[in-house]
Amino acid sequence: MTRRPAWKRRSSRFQHPAQVITTAFAAAIATGAALLSLPAATQSGQRATLLDALFTATSAVCVTGLVTVDTGSYWSGFGQVVILLLIQVGGLGIMTLATLFTVLLSRRLGLRARFLAQAETKSLDLTDVRGVVRRIVLFSLVSEAVVAVALTLRFATAYHEPFGAAVYDGVFHAVSAFNNAGFSTNADSLVGYVTDPWITLTIAAAVILGGLGFPVVFELVRCWRPAQWSVLTRLTVTLTVTLLVLGTLVLTLAEFTNPRTLGPLSGPEKLLAGFFASAMTRTAGFNSLDIGAMRPESLLASDVLMFIGGGSAGTAGGIKVTTFGLLAFVLWSEMRGETHVNVGRRRIPATNQRQALAVALLGVGAVVTATFMLVAITSYELEQILFEAVSAFATVGLSTGITGSLPPQADLLLIVLMFAGRIGPLTLASALALRERTRRFELPEERTIVG
Image (cartoon, rainbow, N blue to C red; front, side, top):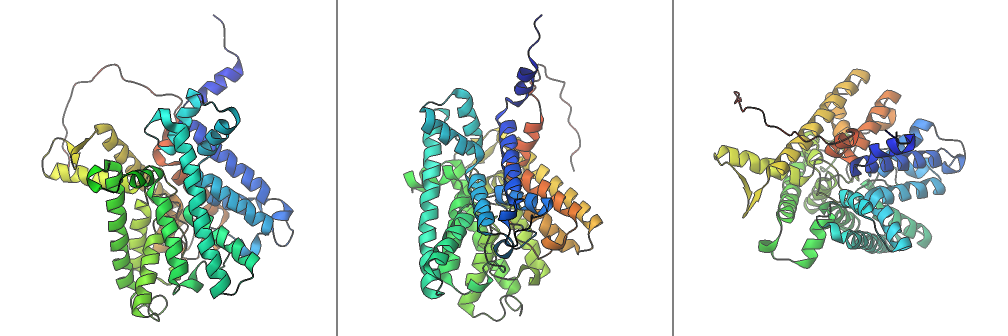
């Protein structure tokens, strides 16, 4: 019997698309950390510590926005450009970019490459992966360009920034917003623009658009009639609007009289700031209010919104609104005693239900475990630690202000959380498995007591 070469045995371990995607994201983070470790990447010309470089690279590739050092004052122009490129790579997806380059260079796409791109873009039609990737890249770049122009005009005219600086800030915030990254060149994020609807609503629109998910956006472009929407689009749009409205109401009411947040603002300004805060919990990471000054009830509401996240196959994080929506329909069907889970006129297969349950439970397990460990190694309050853990796992980037003062072991834990949150709990778990196993027999059925 002929023994296969060692390199073939090793390569066979990475046949599953999830494994390749996980490896690709890890490689992008390692590359980014190496570039940010160069002396040219910092304002001072001194090398950044390996932990700061690794944390920032992970946060950028995973489009999170948590930082241990101030982006605008610590990193040089070269370092900020590296961060911007890492955000773009992480937002579009390593496999999406790789597929695009393959198409442009060879004009041919093999079956294996199509599977890899399908796993990253969540394309439902394997034969149209090339078209999907093209549309994703074009849509992303056009959206970022439009947002960049709008922000540049505002920075230059209303805030009298030099045109070059206005263009740079506009592009940086546009890319960061559309990819739900939350990185800002300002030390206080967008607190200085809390009453400016041009800036805040433009960024909120970019965040929501990028967080809807590419399949949903493409379907909305093709058809605006809700009766013809797929289950994915129906769940995503309905829950996105619902959570935005509920989040705005809850956060505005909770902070209405808080003198450190919404208290000094007028009525319309409070509503604007409340809406922006609600939109940013959809895994964006920008803030126009001091998160550390928010009341405990606001932090708890934000935890829930961040954990749910945005749409599937987009730039948002969290367990995704479709996961949350499917679990809600599973619960509703069980309460009504129905044997099948139906959404509108469609029946949801059991595999989708199990996937939603697995993603949610893995997410809860990751956040609870990380929170327990962070409480053990830090001296901060539980509400601050929980907020930080949820923000990292859901790749949000909001913080109560404790990220930069956490001990090194806490930073490493947040790095793991951000990576797991970007790749996705179910994808990460499947990537660790060497192969899929199919049970070729059924065991006898036996019911147990539940509840």
